[in-house]
Image 1 (tube, rainbow, N blue to C red):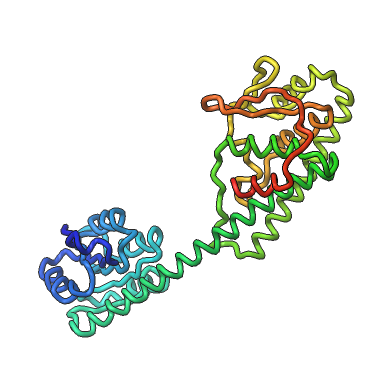
Image 2 (tube, rainbow, N blue to C red; image 1 turned 90 degrees about the vertical axis):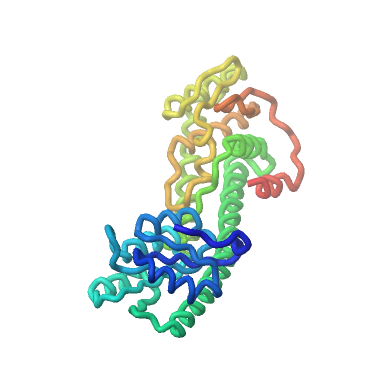
Length: 333
């Protein structure tokens, strides 16, 4: 197995896999001036090259008949893990059935039969490299677009939390929103992107609407239940009541002095961070409802990281927040 020269590392590379040394020599001689060529002599070596250099490889050319697995297995591997790579199958044998199957499954872009016409081979590889460049540019633009859509999705979710607080408590009540978002930020959960191969934008909007509506309904129901069961808790008992309610819902919390410790931080960001096709757990609705209930009883929580957990302590709700406070949180997430 050999690699391209160091001064060619920034250029898109071609992987050529063939167990015949003569074929490797001829391929390098014919194609080496077009792009760096990485070579392997088996499917396993080809997979290793892909895993080591996949991000900078533009084209994969594989012989079909080699010791061990056939070349179309390598092309299948590449299509699943490195879909941006243009895949070409070459062989001296008339294995039409396997070749047609590979084409139909999308594993290869082109089939080139041996012996090669060098001029035609160079033309095919030049076109493949151009296609690889176009795919790279397309993928970059797509990532940027989807990144914007994902940020819009998270912003919409944050807006819903604010809307719930305003609807269920009053438009001036921002403290539970502040506590909820601060705790979610401390959880440091990574936002899960939708599977854009299965969803388009209209699918995303539909899924988000259904998910957010169900979550809002759960929060309102849980808040009503808390108000009915504990209409006028003593100031010192409100946090203890919330801890008991969270524990009853199955959340991993424990009392700690006048506050409590949350042992599974990721659960604090489930509504904001999970993919839109995943329903928000009912216990997470208990958490937001609990913050709204505390605020209605004149109690707030302050969150702080404590090792692998998050500690909450009771505090007085703030009366005023900056007008752009919600926008600040949206930028942070």
